[in-house]
Length: 353
Image (tube, rainbow, N blue to C red; front, side, top):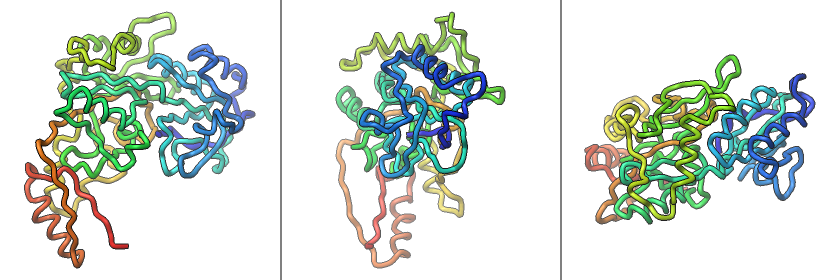
């Protein structure tokens, strides 16, 4: 669902030191031949990666489908070294074409798609008060996981598009979930993501704040292929051992005392929302906080941690109509947004048209 950039495909534009065959072979060594698809032609197998849900379609020299977190930085570095543009894809449910390659702007560099679908681990944090989500976890999957294992709590985002199962990482990348006025837009200061520096080197940023998985925190360089130690391989090992079907308290993640104290949702959003002034409370270009938030593909998100929320004992929905916009605005400001501690769970507006 996120894309680093939308660029034009041309297999002839690979850098001189790297051929198409060499690049694809490198991806195959990293993730296995069965997890690399040829994206140069749209087929029944590749259409789900090359064609957008509503618009946009293109081609890619390869579609890499990692099954381990530690494979992703290697794929990204190989793609960068080969002069490729990278499109990072979650569930490919985006409605604007940003999650697929584009063939319309004249850029002759080849495109690589990294599909995060297989990276779909969910692990409770602090006995379910928070959840760890790998980048391929869908919002519907997360909602069901929390409901089944922690029935007195809710996950963050409940969107109209939940049935499509868009990913949590995409929610962070685009700041979705604005109707959730108690919880705020999808945002977290606890994440694991990749970035590419000006020299073309992949860097890792770890602010997950998890005990026993904090040997490397902050920003650091990738370890060499010969080394197996590190937070990303350790995280893979834990996920392999974790039985997500049956939550075991002793296998919960625990927050540490460093990044584990950072917020996992916009805690002050309700106060900002109830402060009526000329400032915007939320907008698409708002890049406050950790750089993965509203990054729109400028970094590659591997995993995030999100708060869960105590479920209300009772719920009730109201449909209220107004004769004019002025009355509706007064109701919004004087009733709905009068007290940040007494906000409704969500408010949505519908026009007569």
